[in-house]
Image (cartoon, rainbow, N blue to C red; front, top):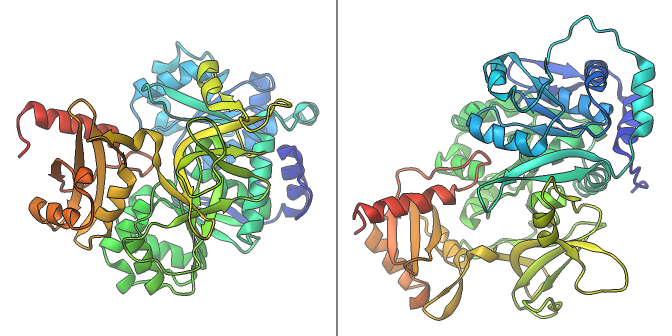
Length: 514
């Protein structure tokens, strides 16, 4: 691999020197932009941003997911202002919570979100519409700002849900993204011929991979409308129309296509690489995809937002039984991961421990949240000789006989029930191996010491209970089974567990559990 150019803006500028062509960079359902147009428009808006900000001032983007947002993110990079993507589909109260924490100097909006701006006036004084006007660009100002940008400056701040209900903003630097994307591009052999079908929203860390890999290789990214994932025939038609060869999706999308049996009727003809992350991929679903698309390379990626996107990966190189869990593999190049026990000692056998990540992918910390930063970004417990910050993921893992990491669960998914330590993820693996279950998951009712099983599928509660009794010890058997017509997902495509905890409490209160 080439030596890392730590300053992302410089790396991107070098690309643009070679890449300013009529090749399409980004396209969505209604528009597209070539690299030439992207470069010119990004510089125009970068100058407008510079006129309203100082270096490292936060800029919030309140825009629909699509080509204009992809361009505006690049404009923020050129302007040296970390951007925050606001989900324009979420309630205005949550948008306000994020803005209060981010304290932006500027909010950029599109016409669709104009009506939200009056509610935000009290928290930011400067707004502008993401449309070109008669502003004359001053190249001297652009050059002066570019010279100020250094590798450790924040590139963006990505807000996720905090455990207390307050959003937490992870600060990702130019150095983080540059180091991560160099690995990502090299590992998966991405280049100018790569064509992504982007599924994840830009406020979700998985989008970082296909967005920046596109920019840094001169690839093309198709921003697929969200509605197409509800009508997957259109999704595959779009992929075939634009000859998409690479996807990086959450498992819920793979599951949707599996449930529709879509691969029996139409296939993504050009697909070569299929990546997935964000949640556990049920092995029976992966097996079905592999049966239909035997020439496609499938890869299980794993990592939290705080490691830019990914810290471990596993290129699927063998078959697994439906009731087997997939490995999450080994550390990405230029990164180190290790497991520690409750005494902060390194685990060297096959015991379960917390996953710790060390290296240049690890974020700077949380924005305006020093206490949370101190708890999660800690001094390396394995050496005390010099300052070295590592990230505590809160994920429980162990090494299998092939020295591949196996994900067990979140630390807060590990429970003590009937005197036994139990990983809810282990129960979920068995549930989802059942061919009559579309999707199943467990929640622990701590107040009453009960394991709850929620599921969507053909089987009845009694049959599912008998199935689990035949597979698991008595202390891992759920107390309640709640059959659902459809599992509710959050904005990131993950199971909305907080919603179902509240849903169970309501059922309990109304005495509707049998």
